[in-house]
Image (tube, rainbow, N blue to C red; front, side, top):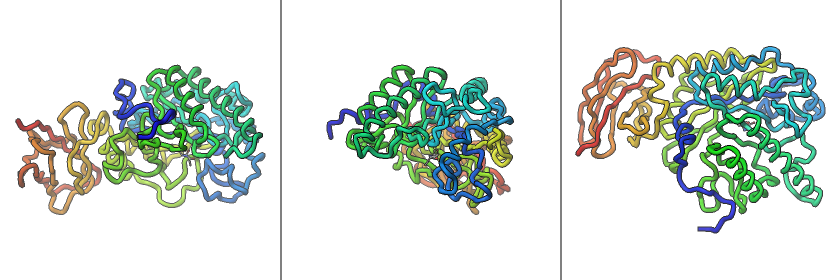
Length: 438
Ligand SMILES: C#C[C@@H]1N[C@@H](C)[C@@H](O)[C@H]1O
């Protein structure tokens, strides 16, 4: 055990109401929107090969040309209420929204820089519109904030000279001021999702970041901050030098999902996922594999079955409208959630042996188990291996027919549920009402 001043300040999961609610969200929406949505992954007819929100880092566009995009930011089709309705339709319980991405452009009228929506033709406070619209739909809001800020003259990747350190001290004050400003302007937000915290300049700020996290939590009791915000004094990120999770949940699952339950180490976590392989901001040309509704529903069930939340990314266009492909996916996922949401919301790891046909989830605080079935075997027999001393009292289809099954006992703790031959085009859920054997 290494003595740390700025490591994790808590071992184990948070047990307060705010975190319990976060734990039960199951499905969330990420929204990446900003100046990068205007070029949409291309410039002067040339396609940028990276993620569209990183186009400023491409040599095909002079940085100053990109930075002046704020003078053409006027999203006439922006309608936060329509966004929130799409999220509600999908069944998202929370949204993570980009207030400022790496390019430094602020979607709120920050007092601490001119590089904001206030100095664009659009002028109005987009963050406020989003927070108000999602609050009205009953969808909690978490604000994404990039510490790395390519526009700010005092941003540094590392601190090599005295001048670097003097500039970065100004940058640290600027960052703190913006974060306190966000938490003050938008008091209903439930958390902050930090990004752009991997560079040495910030990693070296263990004491400052620790103090800032404490200040933010004091300002907003219950605030939820993930493992990506700060490093410990040895530069350890996500997990401190003693292997203890930093922050309230693990934020390492970006475009990837844990392979097995052991990989989450008993922590809370979220997986943030793009529809194409790697495009967060709007890219007009979606290339490569575009995930289908069924894939995304399976990712949702897979995350919840291992105690995490699945957060699906949307990248609105430069005019503020959401592309049709994303609307279609939100509708398809939402139609499935309307029937099966009981197996996703307020559910957790069930402790059952993973089977090939799909995923087990468990309703928190109960003995109710859900089997989210994606792959019916040719035998049409679903194997169940229960934890020791568990009795299956009842098994039935969650949707429509509520068809009841009579589990065939194979051996102690092992059963088959025999399905009638069924055409399966969508995943379906079977409920197991269980009890502990005396
Ligand atoms: C790298 C990187 C960033 N992290 C994701 C959440 C997106 O914001 C991407 O640009």
